[in-house]
Image 1 (cartoon, rainbow, N blue to C red):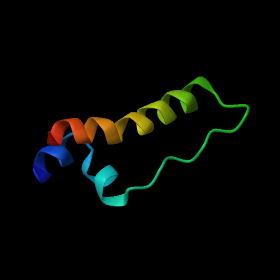
Image 2 (cartoon, helix red, strand yellow):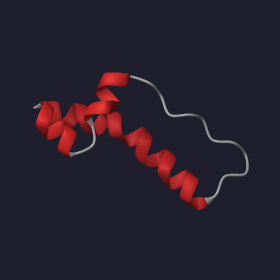
Image 3 (cartoon, one colour):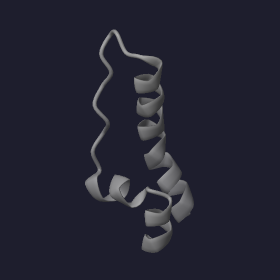
Image 4 (cartoon, rainbow, N blue to C red):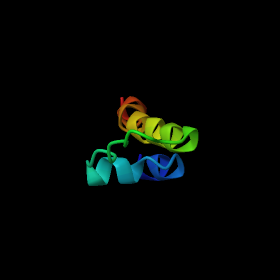
Length: 50
């Protein structure tokens, strides 16, 4: 399981258990997209486990 989560770049999300830094008021589209991806990683990792 650890190898699978590492391959999907999800292992660090489960290890750290930290929330992504909040966005500021004047974010770019790329920053918003990166933030959305980081927020979605934890639920995706839990889905992979179950």
